[in-house]
Length: 205
Picture 1: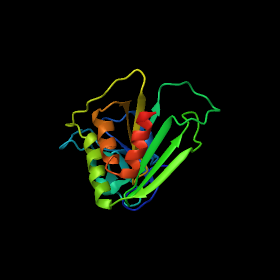
Picture 2 (picture 1 turned 135 degrees about the horizontal axis):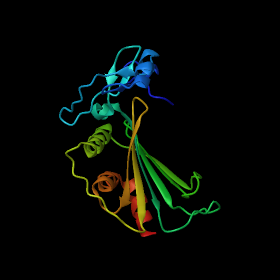
Picture 3 (picture 1 turned 120 degrees about the horizontal axis):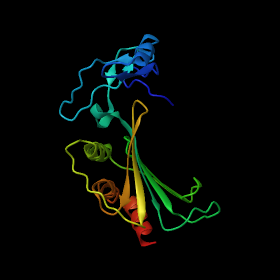
Protein backbone atom coordinates (compact mmCIF):
# COMPACT_ATOMS: atom_id res chain seq x y z
CA UNK A 1 0.00 0.00 0.00
CA UNK A 2 1.35 3.40 -0.98
CA UNK A 3 1.68 6.54 1.05
CA UNK A 4 -1.57 8.32 1.95
CA UNK A 5 -2.19 11.83 3.19
CA UNK A 6 -2.65 11.86 6.98
CA UNK A 7 -4.97 14.87 6.65
CA UNK A 8 -7.46 13.94 3.89
CA UNK A 9 -6.57 10.23 3.42
CA UNK A 10 -5.99 10.69 -0.31
CA UNK A 11 -3.42 8.48 -2.03
CA UNK A 12 -2.64 11.23 -4.53
CA UNK A 13 0.70 11.82 -2.86
CA UNK A 14 4.04 12.66 -4.46
CA UNK A 15 7.56 13.12 -3.03
CA UNK A 16 9.18 16.51 -2.47
CA UNK A 17 12.74 16.99 -3.68
CA UNK A 18 15.09 19.75 -2.50
CA UNK A 19 18.17 21.22 -4.12
CA UNK A 20 18.90 22.38 -7.64
CA UNK A 21 16.93 19.99 -9.88
CA UNK A 22 18.53 17.95 -12.64
CA UNK A 23 16.76 17.88 -16.03
CA UNK A 24 15.22 14.52 -15.17
CA UNK A 25 13.73 15.96 -11.98
CA UNK A 26 12.32 18.92 -13.90
CA UNK A 27 10.61 16.52 -16.29
CA UNK A 28 9.12 14.50 -13.43
CA UNK A 29 7.88 17.71 -11.79
CA UNK A 30 6.22 18.80 -15.04
CA UNK A 31 4.48 15.41 -15.24
CA UNK A 32 3.16 15.86 -11.70
CA UNK A 33 5.22 12.99 -10.28
CA UNK A 34 7.43 15.18 -8.11
CA UNK A 35 7.20 18.50 -6.25
CA UNK A 36 10.25 20.73 -6.23
CA UNK A 37 10.85 22.11 -2.76
CA UNK A 38 13.48 24.70 -3.60
CA UNK A 39 17.19 24.91 -2.95
CA UNK A 40 17.04 25.99 0.70
CA UNK A 41 17.65 23.11 3.12
CA UNK A 42 17.12 23.64 6.82
CA UNK A 43 16.48 21.78 10.05
CA UNK A 44 14.45 23.21 12.95
CA UNK A 45 14.66 21.68 16.43
CA UNK A 46 15.42 18.24 15.04
CA UNK A 47 12.34 18.25 12.81
CA UNK A 48 12.78 17.27 9.20
CA UNK A 49 11.70 19.11 6.10
CA UNK A 50 8.49 18.02 4.41
CA UNK A 51 9.16 15.14 2.03
CA UNK A 52 5.61 14.32 0.87
CA UNK A 53 2.93 16.47 -0.79
CA UNK A 54 -0.78 15.78 -1.23
CA UNK A 55 -2.04 17.05 -4.56
CA UNK A 56 -5.65 16.97 -3.35
CA UNK A 57 -5.47 19.06 -0.17
CA UNK A 58 -1.94 20.55 -0.63
CA UNK A 59 -0.79 19.16 2.71
CA UNK A 60 2.98 18.77 3.20
CA UNK A 61 4.50 16.64 5.93
CA UNK A 62 7.42 14.60 7.20
CA UNK A 63 7.50 11.62 9.58
CA UNK A 64 9.92 13.54 11.81
CA UNK A 65 7.03 15.84 12.73
CA UNK A 66 4.56 13.06 13.57
CA UNK A 67 3.26 12.90 17.14
CA UNK A 68 1.95 9.97 19.19
CA UNK A 69 -1.53 10.38 17.69
CA UNK A 70 -0.05 9.77 14.23
CA UNK A 71 1.14 6.26 15.13
CA UNK A 72 -1.12 3.36 14.15
CA UNK A 73 1.11 0.53 15.40
CA UNK A 74 4.45 -0.24 17.00
CA UNK A 75 5.85 -3.70 16.34
CA UNK A 76 8.80 -5.19 18.20
CA UNK A 77 10.09 -8.43 16.71
CA UNK A 78 13.10 -10.42 17.82
CA UNK A 79 14.58 -13.78 16.97
CA UNK A 80 17.14 -16.28 18.17
CA UNK A 81 20.49 -16.44 16.40
CA UNK A 82 21.44 -19.80 17.86
CA UNK A 83 20.14 -22.17 15.21
CA UNK A 84 20.07 -22.48 11.42
CA UNK A 85 16.92 -22.05 9.36
CA UNK A 86 14.75 -25.16 9.31
CA UNK A 87 11.58 -24.96 7.23
CA UNK A 88 10.13 -27.97 9.03
CA UNK A 89 10.76 -26.88 12.61
CA UNK A 90 7.94 -26.23 15.07
CA UNK A 91 10.26 -24.72 17.67
CA UNK A 92 9.69 -21.13 18.78
CA UNK A 93 12.65 -18.95 17.87
CA UNK A 94 10.96 -15.71 16.76
CA UNK A 95 8.60 -13.50 18.74
CA UNK A 96 6.64 -10.33 18.05
CA UNK A 97 4.71 -7.81 20.14
CA UNK A 98 2.33 -5.37 18.47
CA UNK A 99 1.15 -2.30 20.39
CA UNK A 100 -1.93 -0.44 19.14
CA UNK A 101 -3.21 3.02 20.20
CA UNK A 102 -6.51 1.64 21.55
CA UNK A 103 -4.60 -0.29 24.23
CA UNK A 104 -4.51 -3.65 22.43
CA UNK A 105 -1.26 -5.61 22.81
CA UNK A 106 -0.77 -8.67 20.61
CA UNK A 107 1.90 -11.33 21.09
CA UNK A 108 2.96 -13.96 18.56
CA UNK A 109 5.54 -16.75 18.66
CA UNK A 110 6.60 -18.62 15.55
CA UNK A 111 9.58 -20.34 13.91
CA UNK A 112 12.16 -18.02 12.37
CA UNK A 113 11.77 -19.61 8.95
CA UNK A 114 7.98 -19.27 8.71
CA UNK A 115 4.95 -17.31 9.88
CA UNK A 116 3.26 -20.34 11.40
CA UNK A 117 1.90 -19.10 14.73
CA UNK A 118 2.81 -21.42 17.58
CA UNK A 119 1.54 -19.25 20.43
CA UNK A 120 -0.39 -16.00 20.74
CA UNK A 121 -1.89 -13.73 23.35
CA UNK A 122 -4.00 -10.58 23.26
CA UNK A 123 -4.39 -8.20 26.19
CA UNK A 124 -5.81 -4.72 26.66
CA UNK A 125 -4.37 -1.91 28.77
CA UNK A 126 -5.16 1.76 29.33
CA UNK A 127 -4.65 3.93 26.26
CA UNK A 128 -2.71 6.48 28.34
CA UNK A 129 -0.02 3.87 28.99
CA UNK A 130 0.28 3.17 25.27
CA UNK A 131 0.56 6.87 24.44
CA UNK A 132 3.34 7.26 27.03
CA UNK A 133 5.12 4.32 25.41
CA UNK A 134 4.68 5.83 21.96
CA UNK A 135 6.23 9.06 23.22
CA UNK A 136 9.26 7.13 24.45
CA UNK A 137 9.56 5.36 21.09
CA UNK A 138 9.36 8.64 19.16
CA UNK A 139 12.10 10.00 21.42
CA UNK A 140 14.42 7.24 20.17
CA UNK A 141 14.42 8.87 16.73
CA UNK A 142 15.30 12.36 17.92
CA UNK A 143 18.79 13.50 16.86
CA UNK A 144 19.77 14.42 20.40
CA UNK A 145 18.94 10.98 21.84
CA UNK A 146 22.03 8.96 22.66
CA UNK A 147 21.46 5.37 21.54
CA UNK A 148 23.45 2.68 23.33
CA UNK A 149 23.75 -0.48 21.22
CA UNK A 150 24.66 -3.95 22.37
CA UNK A 151 26.59 -6.19 20.01
CA UNK A 152 26.29 -9.94 20.55
CA UNK A 153 27.54 -12.86 18.46
CA UNK A 154 24.72 -15.19 19.43
CA UNK A 155 21.68 -14.39 21.53
CA UNK A 156 18.83 -12.48 19.86
CA UNK A 157 18.48 -9.66 17.34
CA UNK A 158 15.52 -7.29 17.07
CA UNK A 159 13.60 -5.07 14.69
CA UNK A 160 11.48 -2.16 15.93
CA UNK A 161 8.93 -0.84 13.42
CA UNK A 162 6.69 2.21 13.76
CA UNK A 163 3.78 2.42 11.32
CA UNK A 164 2.42 5.94 10.82
CA UNK A 165 -0.93 7.25 9.63
CA UNK A 166 0.47 7.86 6.13
CA UNK A 167 1.35 4.13 5.82
CA UNK A 168 5.08 4.78 6.03
CA UNK A 169 7.28 2.82 8.41
CA UNK A 170 10.42 3.61 10.38
CA UNK A 171 12.66 0.81 11.55
CA UNK A 172 15.52 0.23 13.93
CA UNK A 173 17.63 -2.92 14.14
CA UNK A 174 20.04 -4.24 16.69
CA UNK A 175 20.92 -6.99 19.13
CA UNK A 176 18.93 -7.75 22.25
CA UNK A 177 21.04 -7.06 25.30
CA UNK A 178 19.83 -4.07 27.30
CA UNK A 179 20.58 -1.32 24.80
CA UNK A 180 18.55 1.88 24.60
CA UNK A 181 16.01 0.67 22.06
CA UNK A 182 15.31 -2.87 23.23
CA UNK A 183 15.31 -1.83 26.90
CA UNK A 184 12.75 0.91 26.19
CA UNK A 185 10.41 -1.68 24.69
CA UNK A 186 11.00 -4.57 27.09
CA UNK A 187 10.69 -2.31 30.15
CA UNK A 188 7.25 -1.29 28.90
CA UNK A 189 6.18 -4.85 28.10
CA UNK A 190 7.27 -6.03 31.54
CA UNK A 191 4.71 -3.67 33.11
CA UNK A 192 2.02 -5.91 31.57
CA UNK A 193 1.89 -9.18 33.56
CA UNK A 194 0.80 -11.35 30.62
CA UNK A 195 3.59 -9.98 28.41
CA UNK A 196 6.18 -10.16 31.18
CA UNK A 197 5.47 -13.89 31.51
CA UNK A 198 6.07 -14.33 27.80
CA UNK A 199 9.34 -12.42 27.88
CA UNK A 200 10.68 -14.20 30.94
CA UNK A 201 9.71 -17.58 29.51
CA UNK A 202 11.62 -16.87 26.31
CA UNK A 203 14.70 -15.66 28.17
CA UNK A 204 14.72 -18.85 30.26
CA UNK A 205 14.67 -21.14 27.19
